[in-house]
Image (cartoon, rainbow, N blue to C red; front, side, top):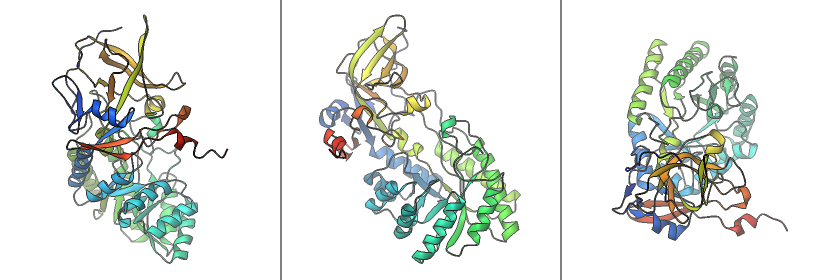
Length: 441
């Protein structure tokens, strides 16, 4: 094993704002001892810091004052989180009927909803129209026709955004790039499809064209891609003005800003990002002699990601001499698929006690029947780590629970909110009865 330098402090950028250590080295979240949380709620468990989540909502709202901030529900969504988002003054971005159902159950203001998706069903569109969703981002010519007919039948004029593929390749993992030409989302700007979509929507009286939308990817750490996207999107706004004599009032540049998963990541502060993005749009609009449209952004990971820590219990420690040490925990790819899917990098700490043992690089592995079931690669943990110890993986609030599965018939973990020394369940742990409920025999 390779001996590495002991990490004595929690990296502020990686952990929730209330994360701390007691005098005996125990991790606390929201003022609560993780050993008590594990005893009450079991492991694995997602522990969500409510104050951190709400604080990030407020930071985005304040940084983009005068613009619209829509929380991207795909990062993590449940009824309570939808209510927090509404209470903090943000809009909500949903992309399926299921996510819309959560918004409805939470009583989320319909006018502050945007409905995305590249293949919305007729039933989903009808539901959106019935609930009065503020904006629907249309993604194909078939959807334009389908939505126009449904809106006409319902006797409403639906506000829509046209999702544009601007031909911008964000510097991120290829699986989460969404702005390049070879892409299932949106209308290509380069091919002329986006301009044609504008023409078709403007010709349909049951649809009101509110503006344009684009999204270039996820886990982005600078504004370079946004700068090029804004340049091309403002160019399309100018082309719409020149052809149709109208200036569209809204421009949605999507989300995708990254977070710190390890100390090596250096995300841009939201105030700096907001100032940079505003300056880019103002510059481009001035160059095109356009009035400034109302700007929208859609953070998801940037709000939910840093707020949550996953607690696990160590089950086995297996040393392979000359190779590596596998520390197996009671979760894995069913509660965090990102490592297997994207080769994502995380950190982890011993959470239930202090250790004076030298730290060694180990592989934190899951319990599933897959050799690729790894949660954290090469993480320094104490050499005396043993079965029964608790380990904590931070920055696990975005896409972990949303993409969780029942692989190997493992029930999904609970989501526990902590704040001010109190804990409450937001989403209960699944049971074996839940897993068997859909079996017909």
